[in-house]
Image (cartoon, rainbow, N blue to C red):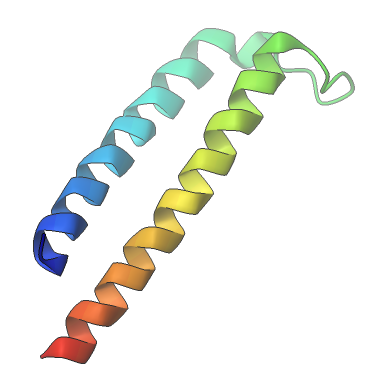
Amino acid sequence: MDYKTKRHELLVQKMKLDKFFTMYLDKFDNQMDSEKPNTPVWKLFKQKSAEYTKLCQEIRNVEYWIKKSV
């Protein structure tokens, strides 16, 4: 698989996570009390947030290699 195809797949995953966060926050915003971050709602949010961070790093890495190969 070439870097541009990989980048495209990663961007699709990122868009899906963006949509997830938008919908999740719309639905559970009132249940996300910052004083009680140990709830199941927070647990899923933190899990998806870590996944999003890792995905963004992968995108930056692939974009670096695309620029490097040109």
